[in-house]
Image (tube, rainbow, N blue to C red; front, side):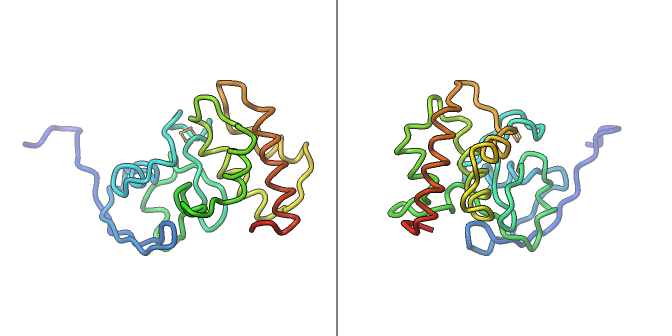
Length: 169
Ligand code: FES
């Protein structure tokens, strides 16, 4: 049945890497990267918060750069390398930022955690020893409703120290 004004979104075949694995998908032109990661690939690390690119809950890495998956069209990452929270470390060996968040108990409800960890990990990958102001600035666009900011800051500082000492990479 044809409904005037309601057209089906065209699809495209997209090849990309997700957490180091090659993936090939048919995606709607309207589908966001977040939708495809969560609904098609079952990767629920990235969270749906605002859906507007404003809260950071959906943060992933695209070619190593922190990006908001809720506002990136899935077809826009063709040929790129996407890392989600699931691909940051392994079950046996967490990424130092993940370990630092656990050590610092830097979560209450935990909904912002994905974004905080992914944003911080991207920062430390390019700036191993950021100062407090730099960390605060980097995470200023990641919202936490519980007010866990002091513990989050402490966790990122802890991770930076650990990584700079070469305890992990
Ligand atoms: Fe993507 Fe809020 S859900 S920035």
